Image 1 (spheres, one colour):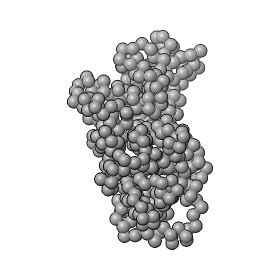
Image 2: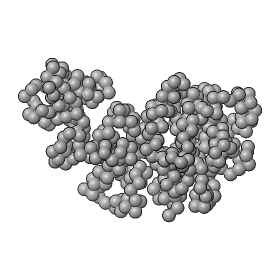
Image 3: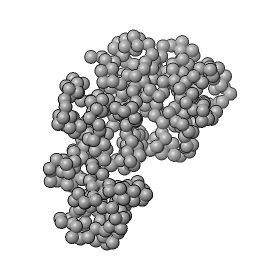
Image 4: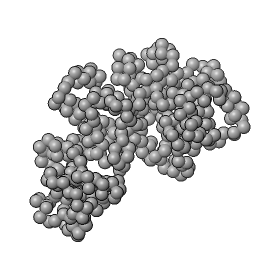
Amino acid sequence: MSVFDELQRRGYIKQLTHEDEIKKALTEEKVTFYIGFDPTADSLHVGHFIAMMFMAHMQRAGHKPIALVGGGTAMIGDPSGKTDMRSMLSREDIEKNIVGIKRQMEKFIDFSEDKALLLNNADWLMNLNYVEFLRDIGVHFSVNNMLRAESIKQRLEKGLSFLEFNYMLMQGYDFLYLNQNHGCTMQLGGDDQWSNMLAGIDLVRRKERKTAFAMTCTLLTNSEGQKMGKTVNGALWLNPEKTPVYDFYQYWRNVDDRDVVKCLKLLTFVDINEIERIEALEGQDINEAKKLLAYEVTKLVHGEEEADKAKSAAEALFGGGTDLSNVPTIEITRTDLEKTLLEILLAGGVFPSKAEGRRNMEQGGVSIDEEKITDLQHKLKEEDFKEDYVLVKKGKKKIYRVLLVG
C-alpha cells in the first residue's frame, strides 16, 4: 500500500493539489516536503501532534521531511484562525521556544544521517531587504486573491494589521527558499493553512517554473466539530511539565466513544487493519480500544516507561489494582495539615487558579471517600490518613493521592 493510500485510509488528507501527480510522485520518487511550526510557546500541543504524525508516516515511506520552525514568521504572527492579533514575541522568547520544540520533534522524526532537516526561517527572513523583497516577491501576489483567502476574510471585520497581512508573502517565500536550496517540492500542513500553501505553490511555479504540490491534513476535532486537546487547565501540551503524563493519558482514556477510532487512525501507528476491526466493536470492547489509544499515544509522546506508569496508575484507581505509586501524588507534611484542603490542592497544581478551585469545591466537584467537600475551610486530619495517604477525587475522572510524609 502506498503512503498516499495509507494516509487517505487513516483520514489524514483533507485537501490537495494535483492529485494524480502527487500519487505518482509519492510512489515513484523520494519527495522532499516541509511542514511549518510556529514557536509561539516552549512546547507543542496536541494540535501539532497530528502534523508530526503526518510527517512521520511520510518519512517511514522513504520521503524526506523538513521541519520548519518559524522563528522569522513568529515575529509577524499568523492571522489564520485568530479573531485578534497574536501577542508579539521577543527574539529571546522565540529562541527559547524553539529549543523546547526541537526536543519534542526528535521523538517523532529521525534527523540522523540527513534523513530529515530541522530549519529555522529566521535564518533567511531576518536579513531580507524590504524594498528588494517587495520588488522580487511582492509583485507576484495579487491583493484581490489575498482578500479572498479565508484566513484574511475572517479577520477583515475585526481588523487586520498590515503586519499580519504580510504573513502570506513570508510563508510563500519559505516554500520558494526551500525549493531553491533544498529541492523541496511539497508542503503539508493543517487545513487552516490552505490559502497560504496555495500562495507558496503559485510563487514557486512563477519564479522557478517548477512543479510544486500541497496537501492539508484534517484538523483534530471531536464528533461535534470542536477542536480536541482543550482541558480545564488550557491546552493539552506535549511537555510533561505543562501537562502531567497521567493527565495526558487520562485525556485519551476518556475521549468520547465516537472519537476513539478516528484518534487511533490519526494519532497512533496501530495497524490500519486492526483499527478497522475495532471500528465494528461496541460496549466494553470500545472501553478496551480507549485503553489502547491512551497507551499508544502516551508511548509516542512520553516513551514506553512513562506510558506504563500512567497505565498502572489508572488500573490502580479504576481497575481494582493495588499499586498506587504512579498515581498523581501531592506530598504533604504534618505542618501542612494546618492548611485548608483547597490550599493543598492549589499547591499541588490540581487547579489552575484559586478562583477555579473555589468554584469547583463549592459546586461539589471535590470529594473524599465519595463525600463531597464543599467547605472551603475544610482541613485534613491525621485520622483521615488510614494508611499514609488520602485519595481526593476531582470530578468523576481525576483522582489524586495526598501522601503524608515525615
